[in-house]
Amino acid sequence: MKLSIQNGRVLDPSQGLDAVLDVFIAAGRIVGLGSPPEGFTANRTIDARGLLVIPGLVDLAARLREPGLEYKATLESEMRAAMAGGVTSLVCPPDTDPVLDEPGLVQMLKHRARSLSQAHVYPLGALTLGLKGETLTEMAELTEAGCIGFSQANVPITDTNVLLHALEYARTFGYTVWLRPQDAFLGRSGVAASGAVATRLGLPGIPVIAETVALHTLFEIVRVTQARVHLCRIGSAAGLDMVRAARREGLPVTADVGAHYIHLTDMDVGYFDAQCRLDPPLRGQQDRAAIRQALADGTVDAICSDHAPVDDDAKQLPFGEAEPGSTGLELLLSLTLKWAREEDIGLLAALALVTSGPAAIIGRECGTLALGEPADLCIFDAEAYWKVEPRVLKSQGHNTPFLGYELPGRVAMTVVAGHITYESLVSSRHG
Image 1 (tube, rainbow, N blue to C red):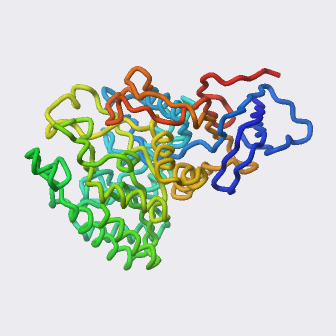
Image 2 (image 1 turned 90 degrees about the vertical axis):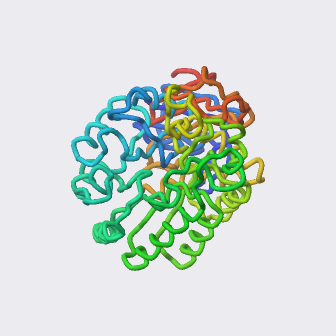
Image 3 (image 1 turned 30 degrees about the vertical axis):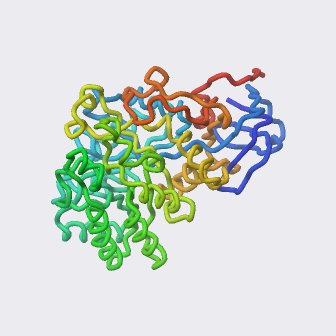
């Protein structure tokens, strides 16, 4: 399939590109920007006038619920959600059932994803067997099977000696370890951020030091091992200050934040709204302001959807009993645009956080429209608003704190490896 995308405003943060250009695609790759290669004849010409053409989004945290949790979502449903959200590459955490701690499970997931010919799926292997924090997995075999790094998902390691050995091994072989800083004991029974809201509602709290104590321990081990660590879902102002200091020191760490946390605070819990039952919990306004500042000043490298579809039976419970999680794949672009507008952040800088920034972390061919690179694109209308409603969401999980919101950025087309995988009201002609 040869595609010609004409008259669109092309934005590519990886190249600092912001211009009205035609894009030419052949054999699944970008073969021309501005002018076609010699002898190029398009099978289909797409008129993107008035639309933005950007690299496909790269999402660093999307739970696809396979294998084992298909009652919450299936690979098919979540791939449809990714396409509707313009997400062409996504990272899958290892907390499936069974856990992704064996090469065969990783290969099966990769095969299933490839057979759908939609988003590129990059699994994270479990750092320890069963995520139990006791025995390291066979990282070399999991890497050969297709894992791009190793993670404990949301399960902290209590034995710091195990963590030390894990980072030593990862440093030796050049692996990246993805960790969500969370002390195993501080606030372990908590369901909301410690503070006035949790106290008023009578909810057990999770203090900020659950994050900062874990960060302090982790940074001490990174100083010794110099292992490459990606910090997942930093959620507090104090934690972000520690990340900022670690980066100034030159420690090999990167960080992301969840899109929900850029906009919401613990006040949104209201009167026990289980849609706001998230992990990590929503924190106060100062923490939200710190997250926004950290995105603007480069302390944080990426915004992720933290997509975790939850079925209605698990969500429609009292707040403390409800399962944490929210759908996010279809909201990632819109929530990023909403933040950028509210903070007067330029489009290139904002889009870098969902394209080239996360692409650099996973180290794969994605997040760019450079010549010769895979043709993964998102075409969207930045001025069109859409209402978040269950009936319009493609994900099997319809639960999100943003139900009823009007959000900017309607995806018109998604292209993966040169093939159109999602389309909504784009004018075109066939050759």
